[in-house]
Length: 378
Image: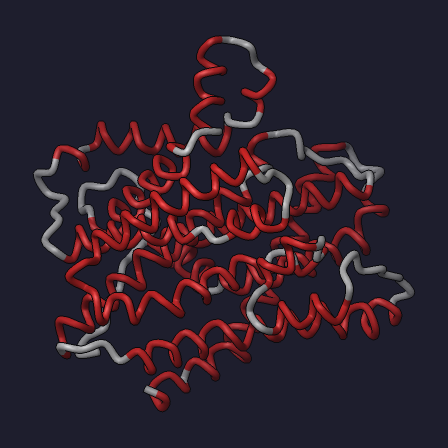
């Protein structure tokens, strides 16, 4: 590419999304093992919402970078695009996959006198995961500590087709995006009605290409002259409204299922309708654009601490199932005598400290040296 593209503030958003995933799995694991947890609270059930945000962000960034490359060089080097994605994604993905499939159950856990019986058949599940189809594996079986790999597989499957589409069919970019959004959502909701609880429905549901297509629409709007200054959609009052809506998704959605009030029923209908993924993902596009481009933003995530945490957020997301399990395994019983609030805060302190340390070491001594290959390869 003739020039680099950097969007300030997005690293902070990455960290917040990764933290929501950590909270979701921490609470569900402690609930499964019988320790104090807050898994019934809405704030602890937002892992899926956070992954949606990651998909929207990926679609936005990848689409914008492809537009920029096309403008600067009058071409898109698909081979180089694949190489850049491979160098960034595959090393940590395969490290975690091999560790989870083979090293953890056969070497690591026996060393600490802890047994583990996988809920999946080893050979077919391993084949699917190693072929970057972990979402298909999850559609058949519960893959335990490897479950989080599904979203990485979906992103890789999206990248496989997205660069060629933008290269050869950029004129029809909007048509492609809207087609993906409405076809995917329509097919999935039809399957939910007619083929519920089948592996086919679970697999199609995992292919959240509509999120990435909506992110691509945001990139298209920005690249083709979208402005923040003077745009009434990005004034402070609208920012407050959008942040309030996003906050309601994070803090209020689950408990509403138990509320019979009319407004709760209306809200619940929205959450279960085809409009929900479109509306929530558009809110995420707004957040990405506002944080990274609007000089009048009322929330600023561009500081050194959040930049650092966001830079290692891929590691936080990838390592968290193992780290959460080990922290609970080694500390939960010992700390269970503490008052509930102190137990909770101590567990999160230990979990996040361990996660940040592991992710920092991984980024600097494993991922970063490999990332330097990008320049040589491309």
